[in-house]
Length: 249
Image 1: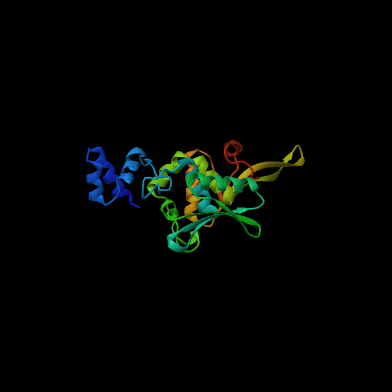
Image 2 (image 1 turned 120 degrees about the vertical axis):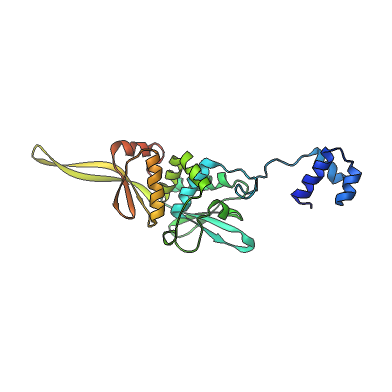
């Protein structure tokens, strides 16, 4: 087997008109290999390559969704030979969200299988790759709320481009759509009113700020009833979130 640099140098030599015999002697390979490289060019993009440290392609929309899921219920764990497992913990009560998480992982890293590992009350969506830390530089020891969580510039660009998908990932992991109620006196009678609202909860102040900034990009009003929780309750704002998040299922 020859590495990519040797192949590129040999192909460049053939393109310059150098004979197969000369190239074969210089690089120590047979002419059949050279003819194969000449007649069957290597693909421009390696589907297994990393989008950050190599020339791999990154599906930006699915990545924005997966980033939200990772910040909510995801983690990386190191295995042998520098391989990392990306794990997204999904509540078994919501099978559609499990399917969505698996689809997002597969769209970001399509050349390896996505596994579903059953645990008590939840399913872990798992995929193995050496380059997960390149895509999730927020990885580190300990819980996320015990360390700084900041997006790099290229991640900020993707979130700004796809704030709806990023918020979908966040709310699908650490958020919910609930029915609230209140009472009001009308013509001397106490009446009960129900209304929907979205709640997002996370112990990391940094992740809460990322959620708030994405809502601001979409001009969706929010409030913070307590330090680790965010609420979206205005009727128009709830309708806007319903368009790209909706109830869990």
